[in-house]
Image (cartoon, rainbow, N blue to C red):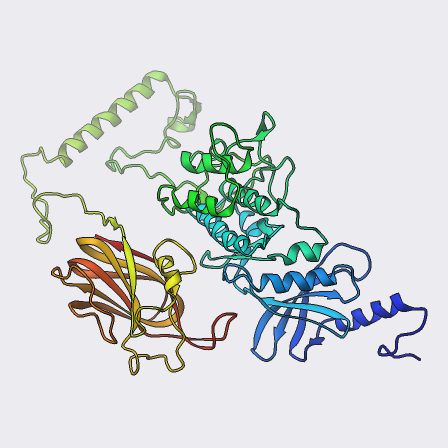
Length: 545
């Protein structure tokens, strides 16, 4: 009997199938380290079509994505080439390609596995996103595709299935180049423009919970149409600002004389960045109903309206108040209808009792009542002041490395990007002050202003972060050195933090410069562009009065 290592004559196709089935199964190992855990998807096609699995890297002890295709398959060469091309694009918004090889009759591609992410298709099953979140997703897609197109790498298959959202709404994009190759498609000459239009469709779906095509797709009903075009987002959801509505419509419809065409991702990224700042509201339910009504969640139900309490002498619910035609028990047990005259008398008595009670409670019974005084309250009522977000004009890095830690992504610490600015990776930690007093970013408000609060996002829990402010006399920054900036005063220290961080000052401070400074960092495993070591990220920095 021939073994799988011996190819039987005249039975080439069956041999290839048998070898593929033996290699692609639960528990099989690739390159002695990637163990196949569970199958996710089988692409359409005859024979042993390409498949996607979840695997486990036994060397780095982490889950990975695994794309597989038989070496003899017509798509094998295209898949391998697409994986190598995708790995060249240095933007972490894309799910990263970690390894690719053609071994033992099998082409495999190992990719990053984003464990806490949900694709946009499943997220939209619960309804549309807030306008701010949907717009931020569109901008992240546009920025990522700008980078990919600069390498002449269009995605070619961008849709809600390929957009992943982490638990903190960070955006990751699946299948750059790979999706088209795995499905057997071809990248046309207009692929870059198709990516731009795809971002428009994803943005529309996130805003409205509808798909802008003529047919339902991705679990969403088709948008209503008029004159051969889908309704604009604002026609479906009233809360969408006019500027957002017009830009989405401009993306989806052919260019006309009134609006210039947006035909590249860079132009789209700039147009979204130029939109007025959007408030990040919670999801709202101001969308036209689906053809089949879905049950409303508890968060979407209107809160009950409680009536103002009345005097106990006149409190009577309408359910207990007999009407002129309601049957009641008459004296002596007789049953009959209440005479209208008797009803009028009863109502009159109730009104009189209520008036007397209200008069007594109002303090008109020749007695005086002095309400208790709160010694902490002011004699004059005043509206509470609302903190205003202050504009950050620029930022600079403060560390002993002459301010060069990830300098190219510095603006992402405060421009709303989900990725943020990333520190250098250090060999020793978590405390880095024995060899570097700290590493962080100084934010410039342009002029001295009163501030009372700073908020920001730390990427990985376990960091120690300090907030410093400059004295009012400081009008320019000193030269970077391995110490706290001269003329700065520490306002707060937050140890072991991660995620959203809120630093509220005990009293407002008049300053132009604010420093957010890491002095301890959590350990992270090696990534596509980072070695294993101690590092963290800083994003969504906001400064308030």
